Amino acid sequence: MANYVEKKVLEVVKELLSEKELELVNVEYVKERDWYLRVFIDKNGGIEIDDCQQLSEQIENKLDEMDFIKDSYILEVSSPGLDRVLKNEKDFEHELGKVVDITMYAPVNGEKIIVGKLTSYDKDSIILDGDKKFLLEKIACIRLHIEF
Image 1: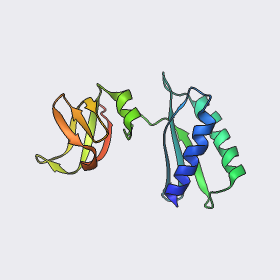
Image 2: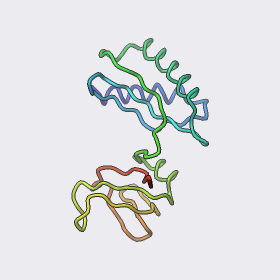
Image 3: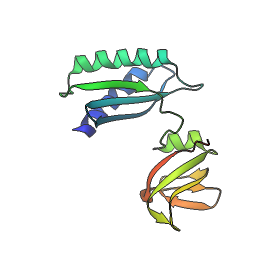
Image 4: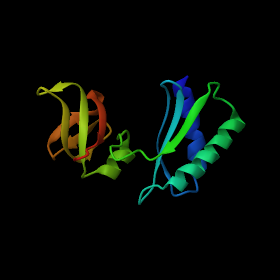
């Protein structure tokens, strides 16, 4: 059910953004206490609250018209945040040269979390610090590193 909703909403949002400078980063439909439909967007220079509000209204109108989500849900439109998750080639390209945190499914040399500079990627792997290769299938999550 959640995957179906995410795919349909992805199509809707892509259509709504086709003539805007906004970029769709991710869509998730998750059950917490309530159902949440989260749409993450970005643009060069960062997004503003008005970007989120306008798109939220457009998404809400379109989803009400299509009426394919049977559950009651809360719609949230926001930026992916400073520690955004990197999921696809576009994300890797955009963040090339930046420091990332990789969470592995199983420890590598005793470590489950590895921090390094994203220096290269392909469809199967990423390379940190110029020479440390990690297969994507072994990685649970990749996100931008935040230094406190």
